[in-house]
Every structure is written in C-alpha cells, then in structure tokens.
Image 1 (cartoon, rainbow, N blue to C red):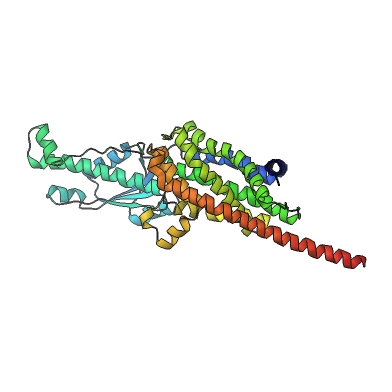
Image 2: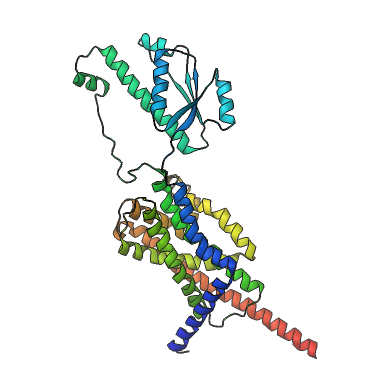
Length: 397
C-alpha cells in the first residue's frame, strides 16, 4: 500500500475510535470526567497543606505551675488544641479510641520536683500513628515547647547576666533551618505531583481497557493492517490525553497555588515519551484483561501500589530489588520522579535525563508489545471467523 493509503487508514481509524469514545458513556467518564475532576478533588483536599488545631488529651499528675505553663504554650500553638483533661491514661485512651482526640500529653507526679532538684524531667507524648500529619503536629509542638522551656530553665539556673550569654548558654552551636524545595513544608506539595501524573496512566488504562472490552464482547471486525490500527487508535487517545496531561500537571497546581517551577519546553520534551508509553501500556494491559468490568477493579487495586513504587512516599533506596524491578516496568515511575524534580526543584531536561531515557525505552518496548498483542488478537479473531464460516457452510450443505 502507498503512504497515502496508510494515512487514510490511520485517519479513518482515528475518527472511528474518537466517535466510539464519545458514544460510550463509560469511556467519556474515564477519558474526560475523571482527569478533569480527580485533580481538583485531590488538590482541594491537600490545599491546606498542614493540619491545625489537632485535639489532644492532657493527663496532669503534677498539678504545678510548670506543667500548667507547658499546657498553656501547647494550647497557644496553631497546630494543637487541648480538647480534654483526663484523670489517668486509661480515661485518655478512651477519648483516642472514640476518635475525639489524636494524642495524649502526660505529666508525671515528679515533673516539677525533678526540675527543682536540677534533674532531668520527662513529659510523655502518646500519638495516634494512624495519621502521619496529626502525629507530626502533636510531636513537633511538644518538642518545640520542651526546647523553649528547657532553654528558659537553663538560663535561670546558669547564673548568666546578659542576653548574649543566655543565647550562648542555651545554643552553643546555633543553626538556621532553610527548606530548599518544599518551602511550605506541606503534604500537598509533597504528594500531589505524583498523584497528578499517575492519574493520566490509570485513566488511560481504564479508557482503553473499557473500549477494548466492548469491542471484544460485541465482536467488532478487526482491521487487517495492525500498524495502521495501532497508530489510529493511539492517535485518538494521545490527542485527548495530551490536553488532559497539560491540564493536570500545568493548570491544576497553579490553580491551587502549589509549587510549580517547571519549564514548558522541558515539560513538553519529557512528557511526550510518557504519553506514548502510557497509551501503549494501556493497550497491552487491555489485552491482558478479558472483561470490561475487570478493568476498573484492576486500575483501582494497582493505583496505590504504583504510587508507592515510584519512591514518592518511601525512599527509592529502601525499596527491595524485586519491587524496584517491577517499578522500572511502569511509565508512571520514571514520570513521577522526573516531574517532581522539574516542578518542585526547577530541574531542566538535562537534570532528569535518566528518567527521560527510561521513559523513551519503555515507550519503544510497550509500542512493540502493543503491536504484538494486537496481532495476536487479530489471528485469534481470524481463526474464529474461519471456524464460524465453515460451520455456516456445513449447515447449508
């Protein structure tokens, strides 16, 4: 066939696939609604970045001015709120069990006595570890108050006379904490870039799998030229999801004020192999999932593991070798790592060349694999058509 014929075939298949997408309510949901709505939902949830006024239960067996001062400073902080006072630890645990509070602040009977004797005193902090942000708020606030009051006691007992002597006595080695990238210290800037990138891969898996399942169930005729069929099908999804990818990774973070230092040309170069790899990955995945309904279960069950395997919430060096091998087979792994560096750290394309190379390799591998599985399905379809034709001829005879 001539090049003109190939272009016509690709154009016809692209148009048929696009029409099929917009005629299928499920495909519209996953191609359009999901990429538009999910980023807004996640960004809105994480928009506050940090938690405030986390309720805490106080068990004060000391009943001294020093323990009351500690409690007042905790209450004055923006992150913690003293919600209840309990007579003992067991009573405080009941508040935690009912979800009324997320932490316990316990002062032993000898809390002030130990300080008066120039001995080390202790404050016990019990936190509900189910929520990382609440644990962080309670523990860091207690630590800051303890450091502040400890410095005040140290100055009073050291016998210094000037403010400079007091500073040296409490901080002989001073330091300045300057956050370099996640300047807000918030959870949104930490996790949102990875979620936004992963949404595109999972939405493509859902969309392609849904349409492929429908075509198999309704026994749509297969196109003889597999290469034309693949490029036509891929072009339909690439054009739609190119817009969705730009919306998710460029528009949504700016709408909610998250850190976004990515350069557009670098983003365009980096995301091109990612989109190609995701489309091919979805085609391969759709051929492995036999039923239309199973696609949604697969996408839901794999989303959280895929996010963890990217190394965004657990250090990449801490992931076992076997799971790192699985992670390296996913386009989202390299895309999340590279996009976080580009958006949060201002990295250029040369700084993420390892991730870009990984995406390019996966794009080639999955494109070849997609052509292979489509050809396999074509042979199976052709075989069953031949069997059906022979049965029809036998019936006529």
